[in-house]
Length: 438
Image 1 (cartoon, rainbow, N blue to C red):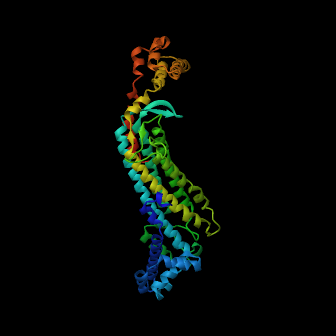
Image 2 (image 1 turned 60 degrees about the horizontal axis):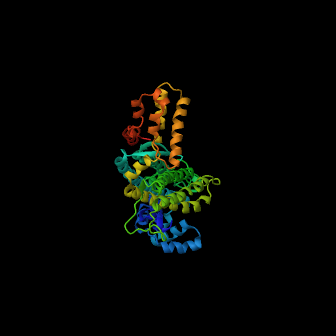
Image 3 (image 1 turned 120 degrees about the vertical axis):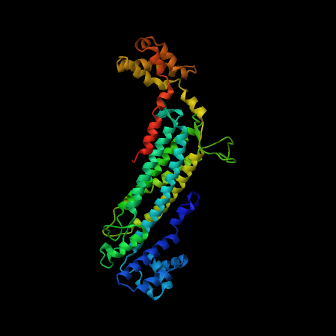
């Protein structure tokens, strides 16, 4: 991933130095287990741990000849360890190192992303609490529907990221497996105790059965989970972009002092952060299909998955980490224009009360078909007046309709036009979101 969309902590996970650090820990830990089993001398294991060093430039130079990264690494280790290096990699195969290392890197990346999600949940929690009592127009198909709470709009995103955290925690556990099982996974040349020891040292669990590699369905689920998280992020970004539109102007992402929105038009305040989240979500989702295709491999091992993972793992995790951090900042710096929210709520002359009038008529004994016709005819008249630029209030038309007045007492009709009615259960819903375990 390019530096523009990279944060140092996540980028470091995919650095050559971190990769070789994990590789050495796998090899050194395996030697310690072999020493305990009496397969190699205990002093040799100590020497390997003490003298094991590597040089990235030297590994790169060796690989030009070997065309094999693990062998290049082992050769460089041998140059530093000396004669005891003959005990390194005993009974192991390259995939034991590569797949176990990949598991460690994915768990490291998961831990950062889970922290990112926690930050988003905290930011959303604050905004929900601030706006739970703010009545706003709800929209379906982009058209005014019925009022809701602005806080509940945000609470939906909070619930989505609670689910995201749960799913990612499960995906992390799924990829946190270690395989030190030797060629084609038979343990013929390495004792399963070695695998158990390495797994414990690295915070992993032994893979119940591997071929020469860890099954890739684990990784497919991991990247699919990242894709779903990215989509939840985009869902928020799309809402933000809509709310910031000039015709809506209910909320706005942060716009810093000195920031410029356009090279040509000095007045512009564009939703660039939300648009950036949308773009980065596409990048993360684009890694899901290759991860799924990596599941189907030849026999006990091929490397068709390898090049894919070397690209998609850094790109997906680095892009998502950057984007989630940006999203948390956007939420915290978001401005909500309460006056504009109220203006938009009244923009269609109270047509959003139509269902309440409909229900009042049915409660009074009018058939649903007749009630719908009565309410809709008044609603369409208001629509028409508004289109002609006339002032029109749905409540006035309803209260003046003689047919409706005969069916429903005036005090009951008047009670239908209370906007607070729509958020009377907002706190209960929010409490349910907070307490939900799903």
